[in-house]
Image 1 (cartoon, rainbow, N blue to C red):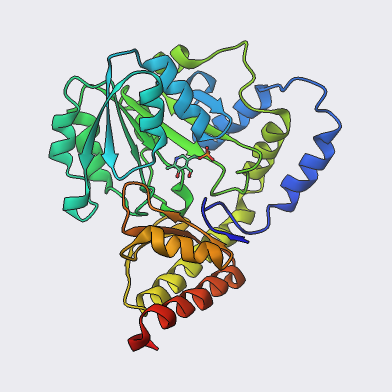
Image 2 (image 1 turned 135 degrees about the vertical axis):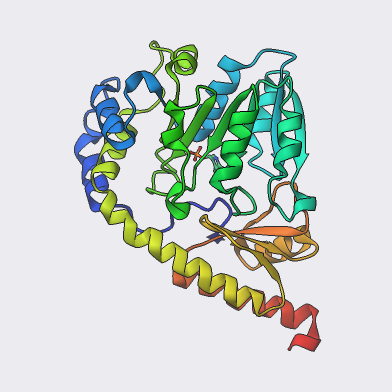
Length: 326
Ligand SMILES: Cc1ncc(COP(=O)(O)O)c(C=O)c1O
């Protein structure tokens, strides 16, 4: 089965990270220690420990932030479409959700509507670049939103290294800004789990639990090595960009609409998404219908071999159902 559902980093992990994991495997009898990790993250991000919350992937950070910053009856604002975990965690915490539709606006953020929706809200969540479209909000729009609202704004930069623009330096400027980063899509640690949040210490102190070990000891060591060896990943971030452009071009040749993407996936308009997904599954290719977009499929970008397999199978599909294209 070719699994292109979750859009992880599909290329080889840094050899330094692998040797670090092996070297530390025999030490997992001890609880994790975070001092060196925070020092490394301080050098990496420019923010000291009291501005940083580490987590078992950004999913856990979304869980922690929702639990610790929200109360029953609060309101959060999310975009439609966007990463579903923001709403999932809101529901778990009995929080009211207001969704702002970006569909009518060709997936661009209708920022005036967003600012309006944020009245009386506790948190505005948004992924930038966006999952599932792969598109992004320009920095001036984000600044306008952050400056205009009274609530917290959590910008999830899970795909940062494929985009290059960040609001991270603004955290010092705006005490309502939280930035999330993950090493799942960028540094090959999806299976080990590592992410961090940066925000003003007034926010971070509400979420830190010194009795809990959020990140396991192998993930701590692996994350530090991934940062140390970050130069290694640049070649693959570039390669993923090239593969994504190649795939977008090839898929457009089938007459399908492909949204421009700054991530590890492409969002493709296929009509009946579930029908094509099921058919692909039978051909041993697994991908997802884009959340909140039933006419679109989300395709993770893999190696050239994986991508080629997808294209060959897609060609078969179009030959089969639309003989006019044959
Ligand atoms: C926007 C966004 N945020 C967070 C996550 C979760 O990442 P992690 O593996 O760090 O939990 C994903 C994963 O698909 C994502 O697309």
